[in-house]
Amino acid sequence: MSRQQLEQGIALLTQIFESPQILKLSVPEPIRGRLAFYFVARANEKEWLFTLSQEALSDLPAMKTYQQAADRFARDLEKRFRNKSPNLFFCTSGVPMLIQIEWPLEPLANRAASYLWVGVTDTRDGRVAHCTLSSRINRASLI
Image (cartoon, rainbow, N blue to C red):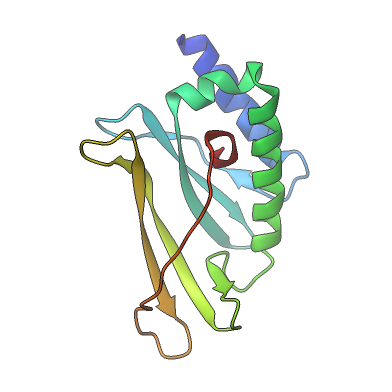
């Protein structure tokens, strides 16, 4: 992966996010000790933080599936920004939960896996929610 590929990937991601002129994407901040960057998407006086690896960014210009996933992610995030908070979700039971994802992905010891810390708060009373979260994520859908 070259510096040029990385810069092209960052430029393409910015173009994908900002093309409908709703979202603004921050200049990426390198994560110390990691081959990844923090990004902040902003719209309607709200923001949402996420990270991407150098590898994913470098591969973005050549990988149509990554580009499609990035576009779906950006368009879905635009919809989330219409909410009071992009971090507000509803359980299947209708209970409103504030879900805050703490990036970046962390390696899981002795496994070929990673994890994220996720804070879940019941917005009705502000208590930490005791529940399970599940997600099926593949690499292309993380972009």
